[in-house]
Image (cartoon, rainbow, N blue to C red):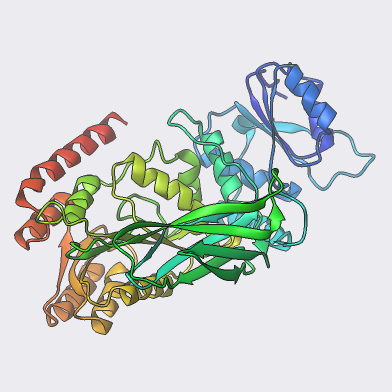
Amino acid sequence: MTTPSPESAFLILTPDGLADIGARVHHAGAAFYLNPGVASGAEVARLRAAGAQVHVLPQALPFDLSGQFEQVLLAAGLPAGRLWIEHPAREPARDTAPAPLAALDTAEAEPALHERLATGAARLAGGALRRLRSAGGDRPLLVLPYLGFGNARKLWIRGRVLDEASFREQTGQDSSWSNLVALYHRLESDEVAGARVLAHFDGRTWESVTDGGGYFEFEITPASALAGGSHRIGLELPEWKGTDGAPIRASAEAFVPAAGARFGIISDIDDTVLWTNVTNKLNMALMLARTNAHTRKPFKGVAAFYRALRDGAAGNEDNPLFYVSSSPWHLFGFLVDFLKLQGIPVGPLLLRELGLRDVFKPTQHGNHKLDKIELILSFYPDMQFVLIGDSGEKDPEIYTEIVRRHPQQVRMIYIRNVNPDPARIDALDSLIEEVSTTGTQLVLAPDSVFAAAHAAAEGLIGVDRLAAVRSDKKEDDGILSAG
């Protein structure tokens, strides 16, 4: 068997595997990723003292998933021969010999890889779901609020309570393996069900209880009208104490559109702002394993186009943006970081409740998006909206249904045309004709420059902003060519 180099990384699933590789490798410079319980605290300390990097996974990888997991890592583009993965044939008995480890460059793909990956990932997800914890212990918890929104009379905020897990900040230098570990941390966070959450705002308090997924939700109704801008809501877990002995607290942020806003923008994220291949959850996971918010790039010209829509024709309208995505709430932080890093205006994100199992299964997302857009429109009945999506999934059909229900609230629909199939084009032509009868336009746009030119002609953005969109597209072209 090939002898691993000391600079390799090792995924170790059992104590026998650690003993086997520990006898054959100099620890200095090696990185060990261990299932929980594989090494004692003293053993971890000895490895680190010898110069090794040691990371304990937040959840145990099942033994029967190691072969499938190896193929995921291969597809993620990790260097062959640098990562070694333990392959126990079964859960080891006490008297079995040490399990061998195999390098990535010796692995052979088996038939029906996607099916095996989905099956194995579902088993892993099932285990994570079975480990769902209820409130009632003394472990540290984390309150994760999401960006909320509202109007002069009420605010809507949502968040989640999790076992405390510090996802370190990622950088553009992170490897595919580091990205995969970060994704694993996000998807394997332990939800806390049944936790009481208090929201404090404007001298009043509201109470909620987390559901089975650890989510909580508030509709805040202040005593007096709210001005446009950002509003802070205090959150508290009254029955849980931090290291200082005080209740665990956090702060949520909710946006109220400015008085001068002329219209709102509701945008898809998946394959509209950035490529996610959300129609295939497995490929989406592999993509996220290859990259992070620093290394991902938006579609060409999107950043400048969205800034122009926010500013409007007058240049200072501060039109609000909302993002509706089929991506899971687990990726909220990743997506917010991406928007900020790429200079795309940040707004509330309405994502989807997905278990880890669902990430690896094709799912219907139309009802989710429709419901979330309905929620947004209900807060702003007197505001018109520009809807932006792509033709790859059902955005045109969803937006057409919104026009049927709320014809006065849809100002324009822009669909990035990504599907050249003639049957799809015919279907879109029918939708364009139907939408046009209401006075709204559904515009198929090949890119952001085309959409921006149309928006300028319609008085949605300033004509002087077209140069910035063109420049942004050229800059993105250069980045993609260099990459």
